[in-house]
Amino acid sequence: MLRISAFRLLGRTGASRLSLLEDFSLRHYSSDPLGVQDDTRDARAYFTTPIFYVNAAPHIGHLYSAVLADALCRYHRLRVPSAAATRFSTGTDEHGLKIQQAAAAAGLAPSELCDRVSAQFQQLFREADISSTDFIRTTEARHRMAVQHFWGVLKARGLLYKGLYEGWYCASDECFLPEAKVTRQPGPSGDLCPVSLESGHPVSWTKEENYIFRLSQFREPLQRWLRGDPQAITPEPFHHAVLQWLEEELPDLSVSRRSSHLHWGIPVPGDDSQTIYVWLDALVNYLTVIGYPNAEFKSWWPTTSHIIGKDILKFHAVYWPALLLGAGMSPPHRIYVHSHWTVCGQKMSKSLGNVVDPRTCLDRYTVDGFRYFLLRQGVPNWDCDYYGEKVVKLLDSELAFALGGLLNRCTANRINPSGTYPAFCTTCFPSEPGLVGPSGRAQAEDYALVSAVATLPKQVADHYDNFQIYKALEAVSSCVRQTNGFVQRHAPWKLNWESPVDAPWLGTVLHVALECLRVFGTLLQPVTPSLADKLLSRLGISATERGLGELHFLPRFYGHPCPFEGRRLGPETGVLFPRLDQSRAWLESYTNAF
Ligand code: MSP
Image 1 (tube, rainbow, N blue to C red):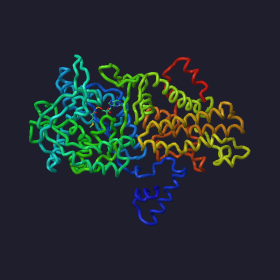
Image 2 (cartoon, helix red, strand yellow; image 1 turned 135 degrees about the vertical axis):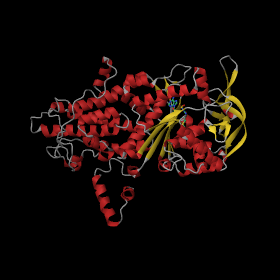
Image 3 (cartoon, rainbow, N blue to C red; image 1 turned 180 degrees about the vertical axis):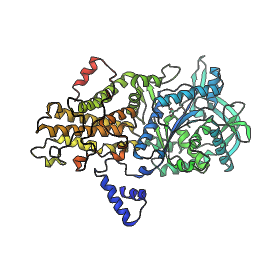
Image 4 (cartoon, helix red, strand yellow; image 1 turned 120 degrees about the vertical axis):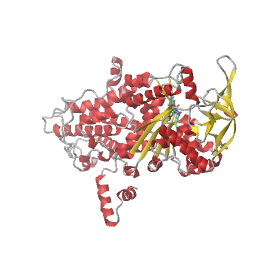
């Protein structure tokens, strides 16, 4: 696998290919710890979040979608050195009945509501360190042009026809529903009201002439796409769910509404009496961002990864790929799906008054702390519950105590008075346990630690590929614990720099621990960018030494020179992560943790 992709990457022929390959594999001496020698090294990538409705202020669920996409994108940038190879878009979904009604209820013009709430999303994402390269608003002229062009292509290909649509419409979810998906629930006045079975939101009966997309023609092409690309939708249960949906009949889809009913949207080209359905409008945002319909979009489109919540899976995995196929394009490369956050066991909702403001969380737990919490606790396959105490416990134990404590233990002046990356002694810690001689001090557990940290980058890469960022963080956290165990076992504070017997081993213990910290700091960059920067800066690792391509763990152990040995550590800039719970009880429960 490595050899094939290296051929392709380097694009040489014959003997020169071979010598390049030999160099290539030599440079990656430590059993390919990075897992980066694949096609992604050279690849472009385009990541997208859903665009967010502007009917209400952002909540933690919205931030979660954005932080997941940000971590995937930042991870890709670590793999692929050229920043120009990555695009990352987010934005706001500003048209449709839902926004029209929310503006009317707030006594505002729709455009005023859009400006106000879109600005809140932009501010939140700036504060949360979301590294997007594009922010799109569907009310922009460039987007209107892209949507109308896309509509024209579908029309020209005979995929739109005019027909009578009669059925239920849910304005909150902006979707049409068959009778089987509607139930009755007591409304505010006690009368039974029709609501969506899935979301519980009210629905109303609609009967009007609309433009209709021939969705039914795409059932088999969609099945072929998904069966031919088992990773198209990740995690697998969502892929499976979409294939299940496609077992059933796929009715044609109404893609416009009467303008007299829905005026806040993009008019159908050549027919002002109809407004384009907000989901068609919204989905095209992914093309607008990359320049559609200008040819430049073609080089980005095949690299698209959509990050979405499970509630909008059908729109992204059925309607959108069908529309794309209809317009002569390929379906998205990847769709990564996540589940939802509940709050103290309940669904977040305005009526329950339990909507959690993400900006308060960023203030309370710090930006990196809250990002870490969301990604460490957020499991894509099922819903997760948020409550304050859980955040505090997690951050105090894993960031303040385990990681911050480890850094402090290896860099504090009393243990490391020279303030350097000490030398590694190969006779104290030979490359194989069987070679340990009289001056050797390494034990079996120490070899287990080296092996765990050496394979960590590859494990993390696999977890990112499977959209299991929480597992990547779990793996890092487990290695941090193991490294603390290593330091505890050898108690460097009991060793003496003045003793010729202790000094080489003391240096080796610190060298190994600092190397582990360098790996952790590098791998944490996508999740906690500022904290990782602080950690790597304290270790004296320069900006050009922080990519996955440079991450050769413990080179001296493998018989290679180490560029960090003897180097001065960076300046001391205070605690790595402040402890959130200052109570004594906390201190007592963690003092004997290792
Ligand atoms: N506007 C549409 C998306 C159009 S994309 C072409 C929309 N917007 S939304 O604001 O309602 O949701 C945006 C994202 O937030 C979705 O991925 C959704 O799953 C996510 N979340 C909304 N509530 C959530 C939670 N409670 N928890 C986690 N994410 C949730 O849908």
